[in-house]
Amino acid sequence: MSNIIIKSLVLNPKLLKIILLMEEKELIQKAQSGDKPSLAELVKKYEQTIFNFAFKICRDKNYAEHIMQETFYSMVKSLHQFDHNSKLSTWLYRIVANHCLMMARKAKSRSFVSFDDDDNLFEEKYAADWSSIPYKDTENTELKNILDLAIQNLSPDYRMVFLLRDVEGLSTEETAEVTELSIPAVKSRLHRARAFLRKEINEAFSR
Image (cartoon, rainbow, N blue to C red; front, side, top):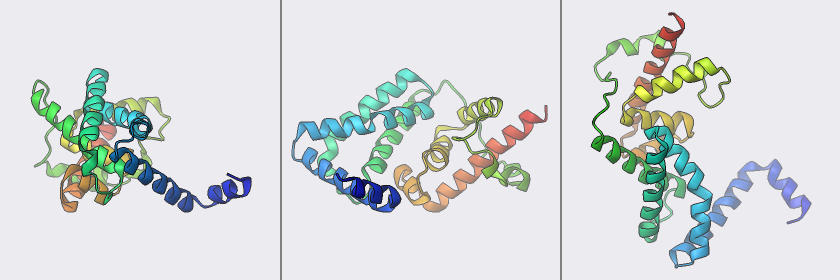
């Protein structure tokens, strides 16, 4: 690829994204036709993303590795059903989400915070100004530790929505597709999760 083409792609990220999606589509089609190197390349491309997301949900390295293996086993078994109507990453997130939620429901030894009926979370002081504590970019170690602990206290259903939307950067529509929730339900769970995390941070710094 010439330097001129590379430079134009750098200056036009939308064009680069389109080209990468086209390349991935070709790779998927080859894998669907039984091309093992293409399948191996897809696994290699997504294995770190899948492991990281599974670990954020279940907070256990062994569980995350098991979920990653189960996810790719499901991908290999069902890739022929993938219809390209969504991104492969969204499809994989849905598989991970299903495995994580199944595992969470089996492991009932831990209780999580419940705030379905907690109207206090709708107070403006908790819901507002979420942008001042971006999860991925924070360099404040104390804040990050408080936030990590608070995220662990969210039930898997709410944690899933928060992580997909605010950490993984999926759109509301993509999050709804992954979790198989309606868009209003995603917005409601995200609002409650954000408000709970803001409340935990406020209380931690006021002690």
